[in-house]
Image (cartoon, rainbow, N blue to C red; front, side):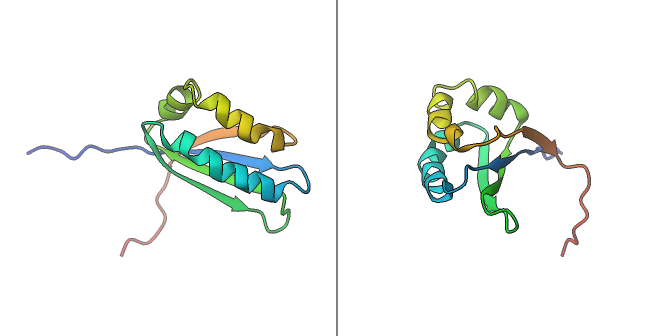
Length: 110
């Protein structure tokens, strides 16, 4: 009997501090930039959450099939310079990007 393949998803996480007064322009630029990252093999999804306490701060969560899909597949692609051009001038300070994999599953499965 063939075993099911276990896929370990990687989550790219960044806290994005957007320059004051630039939130609307940042969100518009991110909508325009999304197809650049979504075209990368191994891309699963992108979610962005706005901070309640600090409205110019965003939490970026990108789900990837594997770490290399982001670090090599996207960052070394011809789409990444355009991504940077569209978005990176909004950040102060530049974001720290980290990658996470699941350590524990604590939710109830029903």
